[in-house]
Amino acid sequence: MRKRSLGGDQAGGYQRTMRSQPIRILGIDPGLRRTGWGLIEADGNRLIHVACGSVETSEKAPLGDRLVAIHDGLIAVIERYAPQEAAVENTFVNANAAATLKLGQARGIAMLVPARAGLSVAEYAPNLVKKTIVGAGHGEKAQIRMMIGVLLPKADPQSEDAADALAIAVCHAHHRTSILLKVAAR
Image (cartoon, rainbow, N blue to C red):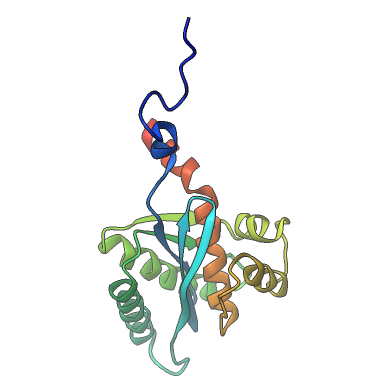
């Protein structure tokens, strides 16, 4: 009996099916003062920094104007960089109910904009993002920023919000396959 190779008789059969196109991922760290955004490309196991930044709002502006600024800023990012998927960090609930509610409104905008652009939007708990990036669910902001520098050497986030957004994008790159499998199983 002849032993058949995984690739069959076609050149690169198995390898060809394992290759995939790079996927551009937008990570969003929602906040009312600053909403961080970070774009990476995931090409197999390779992660490539594309861009990062933050959308800032004035604390003196009315809430509606601040939400419009976040909305318009994220639309500009999506139009400029054309991501294919998005990931948003879940809201951290704190003792101040009013602050949590306002953060929830910013998070709603952060989910709405990519969804309206036709992107799938994944959600990740802050502890999962930290565990994915740092290896522990309670990593400090400085540890996240340092690990982003290791994982994405060309990245130079100018704010913690931008670094956190890159971390969310990296987390999605690592967990997106399991999410796709869950959706396919439905």
